[in-house]
Length: 147
Image (cartoon, rainbow, N blue to C red; front, side, top):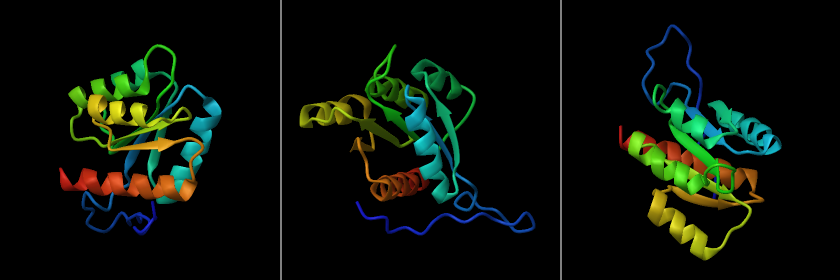
């Protein structure tokens, strides 16, 4: 997936700030702390505020009082799968685009994730960082169209 969108820019405090100019909020959920670090570092390239969470139940609790523009989740985690968490998230925030990551990619799993949890996109690990950034940019544009 090509990264064809320009990086989002920050704004100066003395200018009018529209929804499309503010820093975007991305929540990344993965039980592997190394993956969380890598994703946070990669996503900072698009000047987003990235929050990480290693527990899918905690991620759902965050949505009760906070908003995020995109959620990226690993599929295989203790307590709950990523697709189950994203399905439940859909009930709390139906317009938030979600991206499901997994190292265990199969066509059947991908199709089930799309059907059950309504994910925006399914990305197989290991992922190409430029492709992932392109996918996140597309998800952010999709989030803008439903606001």
